[in-house]
Image 1: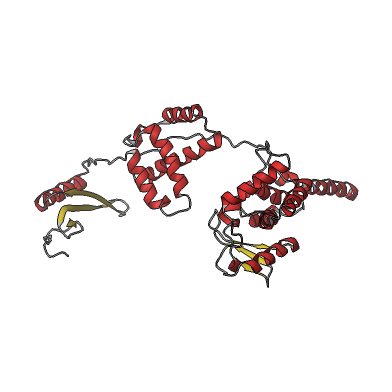
Image 2 (image 1 turned 30 degrees about the horizontal axis):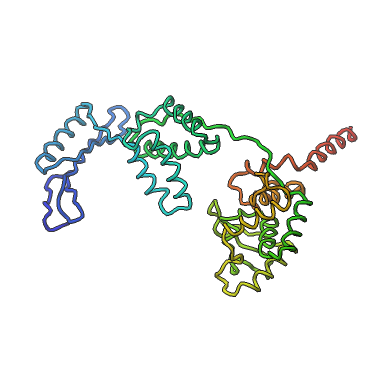
Length: 362
């Protein structure tokens, strides 16, 4: 106990200190045990309060004790959060230092601009949220982008309920995810892209193209940061450590991928350095030049992430189980993997075969 603190002779009354050890307030904790005369069961009820002085704390303790004994309702002053206070709490406990920190703050800023940082959270209802969605539409945001803004808002409201700064969270209706067809690389496009890279002598670009195609890793958050020490040539594997879902996974190399990796490892001397030395902007620069040479400059879906879709599509067409594909791709939910399930037509043939066998057994 700090030297200048006042010792409390009253049970249930104790001082609160600041960083310098000075008493700044007094905490009061009163309790009473109720005994059921019929069953003999016991129930402890408690009431707390914070006051400025020791004398006030003693009086408050006696008052609370009497209210508990005689069943007198105890009024509590509920502390409510503003929008900014909720954001600060969520940032400190969830966003700060995480991979999602920058994106989360961007999404929060959109919400703050509309709602206002000093708005009490309990004034945000379903109607106001609908107005926010209309506002996002008016400024040209897509449904998926608006959903990310709503997700940030939902996080703030959930945290406020959890911390008892908001009684009830208003209902938030997200936009349904569109089922647009994912762009997949054709075999002809694959050969053409690699041929152009060979003609222009941009081998590192073609190597990374094949790396993404054969592994299905996310281009920037996983693929580009792959290091020499992440490769195990003895077991023919690549360890993907820093993933979107923060769960590492192991990818086994195809013969074509192994050739790429061995070639990159001979060039990369330090095992802690990345296998591919270019920046994201450099790769995009070459990508768009090759894309234009392929007469695809107007195809907005021809992007590096397409190679991940292509890898997953090829796996789905190979009659592999969805769980295996999920682990390979690093999907958080099997629902994401199931978006590719319709590509596996072999399973439908198996269904027909099972019905045929049943008829023959009759």
